[in-house]
Length: 146
Image 1 (tube, rainbow, N blue to C red):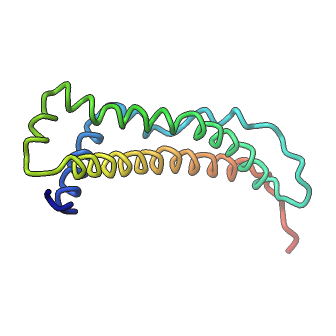
Image 2 (tube, one colour):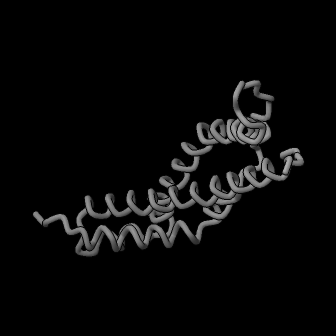
């Protein structure tokens, strides 16, 4: 029985990450979400600034998106990982190398997890920046005494 080698796992994970970056699904998922208007109801929270209320209500739409989209993203990235290899005929080649099946599985899981995390950070991070900029731009201007 062969030992579990972390170097083999990292090699498979890097290959999986490169495959995910080449995928058109990765580019589609990384686009900022424009569906954040679904949570745009007015909030009547006492003691909170107008800017904070606006960002919070718009951010509610992003939370709803996360609940729906992230499992679908993970499902397509994971299915593409194994099924794509089998379709291209490279899964047999990969398993014929001196790596165990556990190392291949762990590497594919790690690579897909990094790709999914990067996609979420890029997409929802950009959405958060856009929402913050919109909320800051729409804050009413006041003249301060001075």
